[in-house]
Length: 375
Image (cartoon, rainbow, N blue to C red):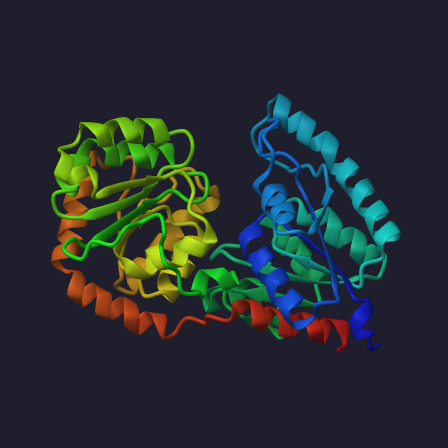
């Protein structure tokens, strides 16, 4: 049944907020009259009072946010597990109420335990859904969701085998529009004589990765200009370490707690080497931009997800992978310097691979959503 273009309302849900917001941007650009509501967690994992990243990002970007107390099933049994199990029926009840009250035309899922009650409640009420899988090994939630979703979009061709082939499409990863736009890098003054080394633990930083970098900053700033996105926890320590460096090296160590989207694209564009974690978004963006990287996978990522992501980029010749549990600061510095010595060849491999990576994942997924809506 054809939908009237100006009356579409979407529920967007899931644990991966960055590609979700990228899709929402694409929808807003193509269909400015559509209504979009994000259904997600209000608090971070572990029952803390810390506001969730998805709520902060979604509300900052001007979208409506509906809180959901979804529970998740885990193998470990403790007080948090019991509390999470209590929230399973609560989440389904909330999702049904939201669907009945808001009457969305479709549900867009980005996986995770938060998306499960929303998609299944919608399915029970006859509301179509489309889901996106960002990783190489789908989690339990997306495996269940795939059974009722009208379309399944994936970032990587290697993932198609996990889902019904007839309704699975390789769209690539939805990437935010600001990520690909030119940037003046206002926080990072230019200095042509030193290659740029960008160190990042993601939006909130990575304390353990920072601790590997701190002891070798004096060594690395002799050869590189460094932009270090530390996050809040490590910022003050980084400032103290910078102040102890020789004056000529201090100016080559730029510390940022958080890097806005408006500047991230410029930093990545100019970075000769990127050192960071290997979440699905990170490795896809590095591949898409043709970047050379040293990847330090999060050791406790679910199902070894980050190790698999890092291996994918390394197999295509543009990254080196180090094991956080087996490496010390000097080992990491050695890896960075060895990679720099081989940079020219690795950079060419990275650029060749970038030509094979879909850079319009949001538009491709939107096209599939329009098909689901019958428009």
